[in-house]
Image (cartoon, rainbow, N blue to C red):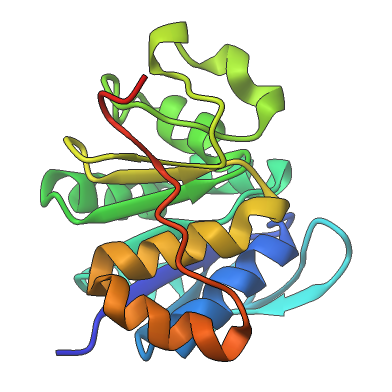
Length: 199
């Protein structure tokens, strides 16, 4: 069965992260929904560096659907918009309660997940400028970090977006499938994430 993936976007979303994630999920053969978290209901919006992004639909239109992964790109303004979206937060909470994968990168781990206290015991990473948002015991300086107990994956920023997306594919479909995506791109599945319990 084809994996279903949700990638929300909002004004101020980090475009390198969003596009890398969406592109990689499509390459993996997943059913990808790009949904607008814009409060005015607009499908087209400006990303953090001025690139225009266009969603497939509004979040409210797919709020009752189930996804194998919900993936949150960063960008400070974009993450703040995610944080303040009641619909998105209900989707993320349901994903968490059902133990389906939630993944967040850059500002999103701090401004969305940590802000709402969704994974209080999870080991996470994020953009280095947000380290102070996390208890020292929960923070890892690692490009990609996976907490197996909470099924939450986090990553640092635009420069780690490719690794982050590849780890999502590994978690959803295994390393063999990830290789079929990686080889034509002239990259490799890394398996470099920091598992819960690692030093």
